[in-house]
Image (cartoon, rainbow over all chains, first blue to last red; front, side):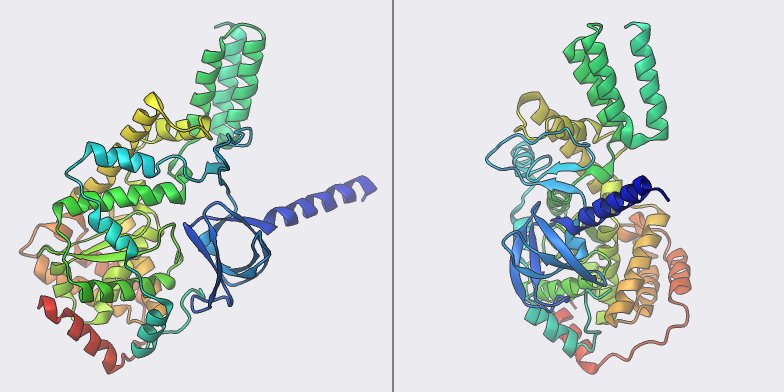
Length: 158
Length: 304
């Protein structure tokens, strides 16, 4: 094997490794937990579109380091390798990259479009949709519910 | 247009069929060449670039955030027909059960999370809006004889969310213009014609999904997918997956005299029972503690 091809392969592997380390949060409020489990304590939250560095994995859980240096675990369904770019100060973001990969947080079908939809359809009431969005079970409630119901205590381990 | 541009566009079409993700680059180079040669205007170039980007757009390009907003409007549209059942304790029980089940799915986290609400109708029905807003009718709750049966219903709806079946109900071509505007105008605030066009696509998408949920229903294949996800969730969480078969059997009896709701929008329970039985195989059923049935009976007493 020539020196050139070894260099090329090394460069390729390095590039692949670097690419695998950065993922972006694809949920509104990405929760970083102390252990790879939904029962793990929430260490910090990372908003939609923000990048985290992945440093390891256990099943569907990714070990991550946030931009401000906090570490913990995030479920892989909350993360994507696609580029979701949080817009800063209204500055335009280049579309030079592939349009397939670039998605701007807060752009597209968003709160503004929903507001226009509401204005055009007075008969459609969002009161209960907003109420639903606030209806949540606490981690303690889920833990108690699983135990009392004799269910399997490893949600999110699959 | 001269021959050079015909060749450039034809080249793009061929590239598109072979390498769908690479065409915008080809088109951009082609239009740059066209502009440089002075044979097309910058407006024409922008239009060609838009067409190339549009050809690549699919439901997969809908971001989780956009799916969330689509789901909110779909749920609001369904709630314009079906009144919410304002029983805090029952809705909270449904929320705890549903959010617990979601943790065992392949997609436990969505942009805005899974949320559950009972709707006040005797129709046997349930709706899953994109992103995780799930509505279950009082009539369907009355069909459930155990928490396992109710878990089967919710797990099936979580399956529809997990597999993004709602988004796939959006008619082909409906999103092309909107997603193209998002790609080409990225970074700009939508105004005027662009905002109007995007809102039109949004409204159309809401109509497509709501109409599928309330009138036409999903295909048998998508229902089978949701049933498969449900069996997986039930098995992982420790509920008896046989409860899905029991539930479908109960619905079969009740739906014989009711062509509304599920009876109208879902394939025959017999077909689904056969499919689910094939998935479950001969797994031994877990023994449920008495407390599971007791809390279920206590919570559902309000609707009996």
